[in-house]
Image 1: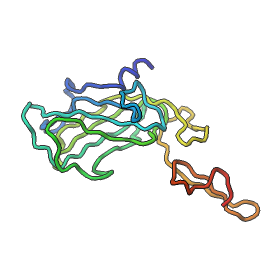
Image 2: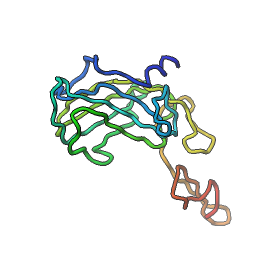
Image 3: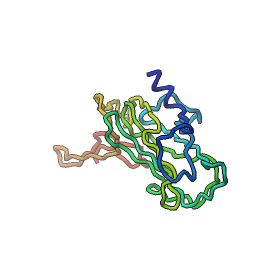
Image 4: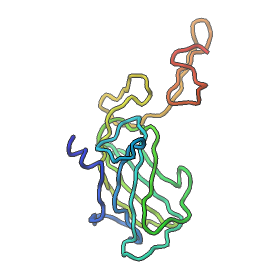
Length: 195
């Protein structure tokens, strides 16, 4: 795990030649940061808030006009199976204009990934055109965690993504029983409680 910890905290991408895109701007570094402490972490933990920071700069040292910015991250399991997409366009829209050099941040509340090693690819688009794309830009180790707060992770060595869910059944007396996961607004019924 020491190798995974060294890989996850900070990965410099400046020297990577296996990238595609126009090269107008380049992703230079990826960091995984604990949202509470604000510090880079050696590994991530399922169920904890995290922030992914991606530094970027113009590739030729000239000031670039960065408009309609679309940043995407794709997470793949250790067998190469695609598992999770993070993308500002998909989640909330593109950035109309950003500084020519800086940091893009993506906050992920309650990291939903099951424990294991993940490969992350990065892609940055400007006005719909790929400026920089790096396959397997960084490798991330995620520790198992109690995502639902139930005491049962059900991972059994598998990789995947947890999602909030609600279950219901009819009690012998006809009342409806509801169980739900996640952190709701306070109106959720406790596990196994009759409604």
